[in-house]
Amino acid sequence: MNVLISLCTAGTLAYASAANKPNIVVILADDMGIDSIAALNPKLGIKTPHLDKLVRSGVSFGDAHSNSSVCTPTRYGVLTGRYSWRSRLKRGIVRQWERPLIEEDRLTLPGLLKQNAYHTACIGKWHLGWNWPKKGSGFTTKLADIDFSKSTSGGPNDRGFDYYFGDDVPNWQPFVWIENGKPQTVPDGKVEFAKHYHSGTGVGMKDWSLEKVLPTITQKSVDYISEQSKTEDPYFLFFPLTSPHTPIAPSKKFQGTSGLNPYADFLMETDWCVGQVLDAIEKSGQADNTLIIFTADNGTSPKCDFNDLLSKGANLQHHWKGMKADAWEGGHRVPFIASWPNKIPAGSSSDQVISVVDIMATCASAAGLKYPMNAAEDSVDLLNEMKGKKSTTPLHEAVICHSVSGVFVVRKGKWKLQYSAGSGGWSQPSDAQASKKGLPKHQLYDLSKDPKETTNLIAQQPEVVAELTAILKRYIEQGRSTPGTSQKNHKGETWWSGLPWPQAAK
Image (cartoon, rainbow, N blue to C red; front, side, top):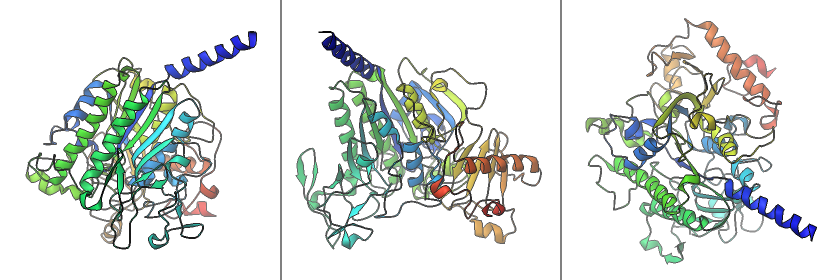
């Protein structure tokens, strides 16, 4: 009898604990700088009513950064709470058909939540690599050798997610829907497709187009929220959007709606997708117990055609210089909005310098969870700041960002140190062009006075340069930027090409 009572009590406590944990929804836009939301940019000239509503309902961080200015490394940072340059990836992205980037033994945010009563789902763009099954045995990186009748491994389901639906990278052909590791579309040599399935309905290739990708993953996310809300378990939904990244493919419903260009239409559709998810959460009856975070993987892509939009009254570079891939602010300054009714004050803001790697520590804190020292080494808990309990000191000693070419940026307070002569990315001048012009090898800006990075103070502030360089060196050598025991980078690395202290290679 006492044993039965004990078991029942334990079960009740477990249920109560699960019931008290908030649902968590993280929406990651693709190629969407902070100037892409009307509520944050009076010069945007494009309507974003759903994201504007999210800004009004919660807290917006005006000095938030993606840990990289391109796709893959930022996704690594979001899911691991760790700077991506600590992994094998020192620049660029995971290429098509490449192996997994997230280490097999690394604790991820979904993995942590899954261990603690959460159901976890990723719906959308993965772009972190898979083990692609080879015809015969083993794995391959060649399209012709992939056996699409077999399941992949090393993807979302092996990195903490209970459920996955989406595609690796929609802009790389052939397009392949994958559900729980199993390809649902099978490309042939002509880059055509067999049937794919959505909501149980087979659709032939003649009826398929990339315009359906965004609506499909949005509906899948809405359905997931609806179904999971009927269960007793809290859920974590990671919704990595495929937009407004290329291919710029607004669905027919949105074509021409902006009156500007297809990219603006696509941005409006991205806003609509967020609105669909917000509506689904509201309809589920669990809005008061759901933490929503919206951010992006990097700044706006030049594929938007900045000049065309500007000529029509839409300025996507109103506040910041640069674009996707750059080390300049436009490459990694991203929107970061959090909403949680009755927990986060509506219409609030924060000027703390933060990073998207902070999502792991923040979500763990919201769920009342702790993680070991060898996890989330660069992630800082933002929850108190979100709740309006403003810190009088910086949450980060410094934030580190990275460009497509592997250029480091160290940001501390008003100071920004960039280890390149040019943009570090796609903007002009490139690093090679800047070097030919005799420009200084490094750049230092006081962003409080010079937000568009026009006056390089590298020669005038040697003490600041030395201080920020010492911080970066320490973060690399200790394997972490947060307090705790030192950890190891990939293969124990403390130096590699591109770092500013070659003597450290000895």
